[in-house]
Length: 242
Image (cartoon, rainbow, N blue to C red; front, side, top):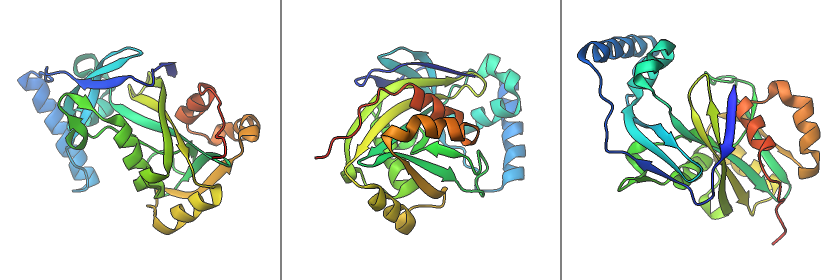
């Protein structure tokens, strides 16, 4: 179940100085679950730093830095949310170009939502790379994801506008919905993705603005739920030709 609220374009993400405090018993349990997951998934699993929301308003997300292993433990044992309270903060983009809205079909090799359609780009906030004082530059994060996922440079983006928060009640993930406008055509975006991007998406689909409602109706069962929420809560202002 998703809960969607407004997030103002000027809103910020700040980090609290209060670290996550765990008892020795709980820390041991988290570490045991982490080691088991590492053994199962191999060395590719890295215990990085993520942002977990503490307080949320239309103007600000206040979060703390936590370890990825805390999220893994909570995922494996959902009842641990009562004590860990991990609410990961991520960014989810809605990319417009002159020809419409960009959707990506997730590659069949992906471990999550393989084969489904979603808006691009998206990703979790990286606490190591983006902290400036106590403020997270989440706009830089969405541009980084855009480059990594479909190969589009920030130079091709003419506007970035946060517009909503999506709270996944089950997974506890908080997505910042961000509208992106590109000066590129659909053909240019597809060519860049084909030539330079990673293999996260097997292909891209560009849906004209006038066809969005019918596209959502026809493909709803194939769409990631967060993308449906973004579409339904976006105030449509189609790109104007420059």
